[in-house]
Image 1: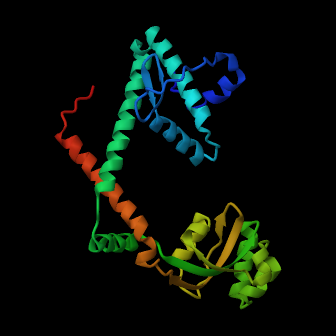
Image 2: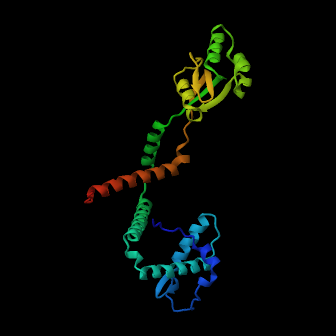
Image 3: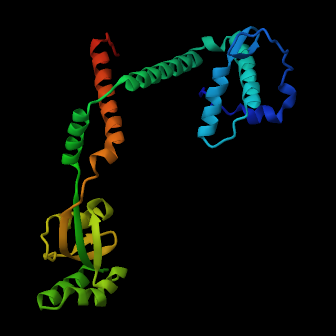
Length: 266
């Protein structure tokens, strides 16, 4: 299968210096054109684009090397065209896909850059996002044991009046047992699902009525307290809200374009 190559030919040509043809200096090249191959120009902008890509990926960008590589690529491209490779269905479809992707991305980038949102619109988005955020934080303690039988024995000791933190120090295999099983404050996403599901149904002061099994063993849980975490202030998340608003608006715009297009599928 043909795959469009990444910009990786520098190493190949560095290993084969004899592949490099000697360029003929020509001061008559148009402004903004750094070289030409059989009359086909290589623009300074192309060199700049590659340099930016290399720099963004942490690589060193040397203008002379990049230009030399682009010349090699153009020489190979023209040879491929002379061989008729651009007319084969496989490569023709790959070229069309690259063109489509480039044009679509360029259009979305320009459309997004033209968009502006009022303070009221961004605050409405802030309220909308805030309403869907799981802000719950819990402070819980647990006693972790290896078997369900051990867990039931701990529950029996608790029912007999023994203190939770004292039993945690004796029985828990979790390091938190040394602190009476106290896990501190946590959000639901930081605990295994079974633990979080059990805690979410409890009220402060409750102790789980039966062992809660997870991949770590069997938990006896005590919910010490719960609260809602503070939301980030509007100004600190304003850039993110703007990006989100742009993405939503672009998605809506794409839907509108699809609605107005004559689309047929097999």
